Image (cartoon, rainbow, N blue to C red; front, side, top):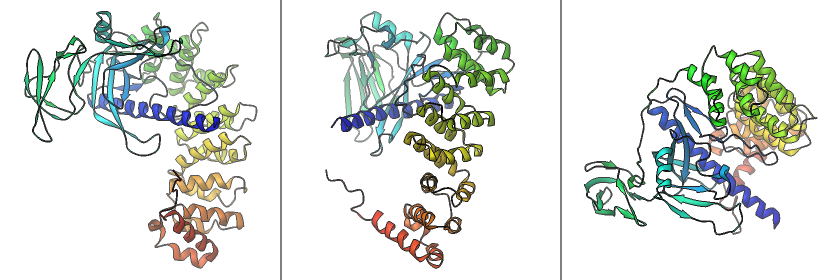
Amino acid sequence: MANRRAFKSDVSFLEKISMGAVGTHRVFKHLRNQGHNPLELERGSMSFKIWKNIKIKRIRVPDILCVDCGRRVESRAKTSFEISMSHSLSDPERGWDYGLNDSDFVALVICKRVGDRPIDWRADELVQYISVDDLRSAQRNNLIALVKPKGAGEGFEARISWPAAVAKSAGTIESVTNDRIQYRRQTDNRMITLSLSKQGFNLNPVVREGDAIFENQVLAAVVPVVKQFPCSGGIARDYYIAQLSSSSLSERYTATKALSRSTEVSRALIGKMNEKSEHIYVRLEAAASLARHNEEQGWSFIEQCLKDNYLQNRLEAVIVLGEIPADASCQLLCSVLMDNQQHPEIRAGAAWALGELRNSLALNALVDSFSAVDEDIRIEAARSLAKLASHFTEEIVDKFPRAAPDKRPGIAWALSKSGRFKLEDLLNALVDEDARHWVSYILGTQGQQKYIDQIEKLKERDPEVYFAVTVLWKIMTSWVYNLEEY
C-alpha cells in the first residue's frame, strides 16, 4: 500500500505543477500579445518535469520578466477563481510575497481539465493582474481574510484571501451603485446582482456600466484588478548591469537572466560569474548568458559546475545546458549522459535536456544509453529520442536494424510515439527475429487507418509480421482495451 500512496502523491504533485506550467504559458503569451518582451525568469515554471531524487532549491523570483520594461510577473493558476495565496505564518521564505518587489504583478488565470492525464490542462483566455504593492497594502490595512492552518506544526500553511466579487458568467454590466453591481448574463439575458460587501469588507468596483465581462472576471475587490498593463519600455542594458550589484539576491538573479538578451556585456557578466561570494545560481546564470553569446569563459564555468561537489548544482547546470541551443551544449550533455561515474539522475537529466535541444548530434548518445543499468536513464533517453524522432525520423529508422537487441526497445518506442515514418521505412528493418518483433510493435501501436492502405506491402514482404500487426490493431481498437476493473 505504501507504493500506491507514493504513486498517488506523485500524480497529485504532477497535476499541480502541470497546471502551474500551463497557466504560466498562458500568461507569457498574454504578455507578449500586449507588446511586452517576456522571458521565463524562474527556471521550470513553464515545464512539468519532476526531479525525484535530487531536490533543487532555486532562488525565489517571479515566473516571468519583461526585459523591455523591467516588470516581473508571478503567475498563479487556479481551478476556481479567487484572489488568494498560500502563506506561512512561521517561515518568511514561504510567505506569499517572498522574493517579490512592490513593482511586480501577480497574474491569476483559471485552468480546466481537458483529459484524464495529470498533464491535461487548458488555461482560460482571461488573465487578470494585481500589483504586489496593492496586495501588500491591503494586507497591512487588514483588508484580508486569513484562514489559519488546521495543524499546529510549523510546516502547515495558512491561506490569505483578498475579498472580491467575481462574475460566474459572461455578460454586460448594467449598473454600478454604492452597494451593488448588476450585470446581464449572456446565456439567458437574466440580470445578476452582486453585493459590494463581502466578509465584512467594502469592495471597490473595477468595471463600469456598459463593460462586456467574462466568466471569472473580478468586478469589485479590496484591491485594483486589471486585464492588462502597458509595457513602458525604456529599460536599457545599463540598468541590468547596475542591478548586478543590487543588495537583493532576486534582483541580481533577474539581471543575469535579462542580460542573456544583450550583447557587449561580457565584462560585467564575467565579473559576476567569478565573484566567489555570490550565490552559485547567479554565477551559473551569468555563465549561461555568456555561453549564449559563445563566450568561452561561460562554457568553461558550466563545465566546472557539471563536476560540482553538490548534486543539485550539477543538475542545475545540466538543465541550463538544455536551454542553450548550441552544439557545445549538446556535446557537454552527451559527455554527461555517457559518464558512468555521474549520478544516475544527473545522467537522466542530461538525457532529458538533449531532448529539449532537438540536435541530431545527440542521436548516438541517446541510443547508446539504452544499455544503461538505471531504468530512469533509459526512460528519459527514450522520451528525448521521441522528441528528436519528429525531426530526424530517417536517421533514427536507419539506426534501428543495426542496433543491438537491448537498444531496440527504446528506438521502437520513440518511433511509435512520433508516428512520422512511412511503412516502407520499416520494411528494410526486418533483418532478424528481434527486429521483426519490434517492427510489429511500432506498426501495431499506430492508428489502423493511417497504414491500412499500405499494409498489403507488409503482407507480401513478411506475412507473420503482417499477422502480428493486424492482431494488435484488433486488440487495441477493442472496447475492452485499457478497461479498468474499478
